[in-house]
Length: 358
Ligand SMILES: CCCCCCCCCCC/C=C/C(=O)SCCNC(=O)CCNC(=O)[C@H](O)C(C)(C)COP(=O)(O)OP(=O)(O)OC[C@H]1O[C@@H](n2cnc3c(N)ncnc32)[C@H](O)[C@@H]1OP(=O)(O)O
Image (tube, rainbow, N blue to C red; front, side, top):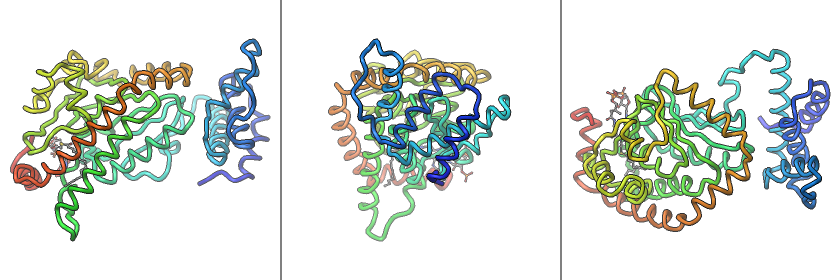
């Protein structure tokens, strides 16, 4: 539900009653107030020695073109969070209360300047349905514009993700399988484009085994943290398919052509330690302390200056962007043909009829 003008005004009165929330939060409140009432920052940048006004200006300017209504909503949410934490400072809000509405296959939360996108089909090992691809794209677009500093993709349950939901192959439209393959290739291309273009630091928190497209897109993340329970598996040849997610380019670049071929052509499954040694994973943590260690680290990173992080990412990514888009287009085109092959149809039917388990 969107915050009304009345909610906003009541948050403005409430904020005066709060105990001092500290400079960082005060700057956030100031920036959201200015954005909600005046829109994007429209005043000249104060001089470097005008420290206080420059900090305020920076905070406002960092909100970019965030719409007034969203800023108003974020202001109301922030004040309400501060009020409830000052009511009971040790009380942690349950995730269900913080989660953003409108997603069926994901749980999306924003806290401590981190937007967390969690795939949430644990009973199906977080297999990606067409709805999940679309919701991840929506969540990434929203995260690119919200006031978080970093964005995380992770999975709920024992798997990170088992990749493409193979039942995506079953609902063939009346226009036939060719049309399905065509729309699948467009979906795939749009999905991977969102990762290529994502402007903020993007971190994968790989909580368990990862298969197929959930592995290939890791090459487009800035950092990949893995539990030692995670494995990395791209069984494309077994499925009569071919690499996507720009992995035909990123994997040889990351791990060298020979190791990439073993994964992408022969479907070799890597342990987390192997994936780390090959450079696909940044760091591996024991499963027993994985969540605690990773989130402590991410909370510290999220306090770094967000503009500097965003600009550093752009400097790294911009050089490659055009190439990555071209590779994504080519991989999607090749897969569109593969999906129509007997090799692919038979492999998918085998899985769906339980003759094979990969
Ligand atoms: C023309 C069509 C176009 C479509 C649009 C496509 C858009 C983009 C496509 C991008 C290309 C992507 C490629 C890939 O990702 S390839 C990789 C695909 N994934 C797999 O092949 C994994 C298949 N799953 C398995 O091998 C096993 O399930 C797994 C090893 C992951 C786990 O085994 P385990 O024995 O532990 O658990 P279950 O098998 O009992 O699984 C529990 C339930 O979850 C269901 N499940 C799991 N994974 C998938 C999946 N990928 N697709 C569909 N369903 C999945 C499984 O069936 C069980 O369900 P039930 O409890 O109902 O039986």
